[in-house]
Each structure stands twice: as C-alpha cells, then as structure tokens.
Length: 274
Ligand SMILES: Nc1ncnc2c1ncn2[C@@H]1O[C@H](COP(=O)(O)OP(=O)(O)OP(=O)(O)O)[C@@H](O)[C@H]1O
Image (cartoon, rainbow, N blue to C red):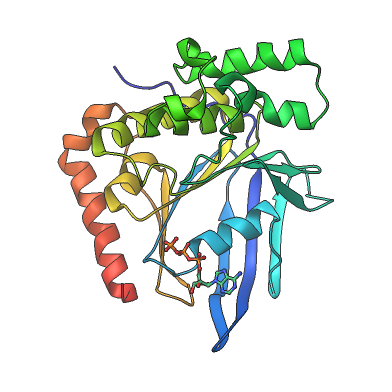
C-alpha cells in the first residue's frame, strides 16, 4: 500500500543565502560552512548528506536559530523568527516560527513518564495539565505508543525513546521539523520502521522537514530532494530532486530506481572528496 501525497499545508519556506560559519578552535579558526545557498520549498522533505564533521549540524542549528552565521542570511517564511530560539529539556522553543528539533539522543527527562516527556513543550508554554495530557495522548497514539504512556524512559527500547522524542516534537505542531541523525544509533530494522513512520507523519501533517543523515540509502529513501555537502568547510556538491515518486511504498527500497539514486548520491559524495 502506498502513502498519501503530502499536504504541505503547514510547511514553511527556508531561504539560505551565502551562509558562512567559522568557529574559534584551540588550534585556530575552524571554517565549518563556506557559503551555502539553498531555497527549500514549503512542505518539502530535504535530506542533508555529507561526511562526518563537514558542518551539517552547524547548518541545522543556524536554521533553528540556535547559532548565528558570520555572513549570509537565513529566512524562514511566512513567519520570520523574531526572537531567536532556546533549547531546554530536549526542546527547541522559537518565538515566532514553530520549529522542532530531533537529535540522535532522544534527550528525555529520565524521571518523567512518557506522557509528561511528550507534554513538556506545552508545559513550558504554560498549557494546563488536562489539555497538554490530551494532546500528548494524541501524539503518542500517532507514533504507536499509547500503551507506554506511564513508563519512564529507562523502561523503553531505543526505538521507543526516539518515538517519544518525535511525539514531543510534533505536539507543538511544528511548521519546520529539523532532524539531526535521529535514527543513527538504532538497529537497521527499527531504523527502517521509523523512517516509514516519519514519512507518514510528514505526509499527514505537511510540515517542512530537513533531515541530516550519514546514510545514503536513508537519504534516498526518505527525501524528495537531497543536498550533498563536501568535507569541511561544507559546500554543496549536489542539489538534486530525486527521481522517485513523492508518495512511496516501503517496497521502493528494493527497486532499481532507488538503487540508481543511491549511486548518484554516492558519486557526489566521492566527487566532493568524502
Ligand atoms: N561550537 C563549536 N566550536 C568549535 N568548533 C565547532 C563548534 N561546533 C562545531 N564545530 C566544528 O565545526 C565542524 C562542523 O561540525 P558539525 O557538528 O556541524 O559537523 P557534522 O557534519 O554535523 O558532523 P557529524 O556528521 O560528525 O555529526 C567540526 O569540525 C566541528 O568540530
């Protein structure tokens, strides 16, 4: 059975122009991003692919408003991010643009139940307990975790913890969902299931998704568009709309079409010097 086509209704457009970022390291300057230009359409699903340490997380943090570029601009529209963002308890809170960030580590609070972890962004926003718990139950059901709401994180598998992290991100109804290698620590089967779940959530909720991964096959399977970066300082070596159907069934993993896209991305990584 195939997926529904994405609604794209809630997504924001992300325009990145001439973005550079250099860090001050102990041994001198560490240039991370060397001029990134990207125009990401509202409601699209983009994979960012590149070798370790090339600057992928840096770019994601800049988009989230958690860091500032040395040069260039990042514009998120229709709502510009007026007040910058803060990161607390595994949750990015942004003044105007609703942006959610999911990391490789689920960042759950160990003493809180699954329900209260999921409800955290609404609690931080001052929403009353009955309303936030009802919303948390809805999100937990969306990620298939209704039965686990009373458990603590220690009682969950790695895949379940990541689903709680996704539910907690979705409870804010983000217009922009940023994921930084979210499933990298999971076994392949669990990772594949979560990839499918993420695509289904995107199709249903219509936010813009930017997904950082090291995995070429994951990038090709998940995304509509893949952006391949060179080793640090990162430049774009390939920006490609994948030649695959927008609505995908899991069986596409076995097709030559997907294999061809994997090959194109692999060649771009090698061309970039990875
Ligand atoms: N706050 C910082 N201070 C100094 N150097 C930094 C800082 N943040 C990142 N860097 C450096 O910038 C470069 C890019 O880091 P970044 O985390 O963006 O890479 P990445 O592509 O996400 O890596 P990985 O795939 O391994 O997670 C690295 O060399 C890193 O050491």
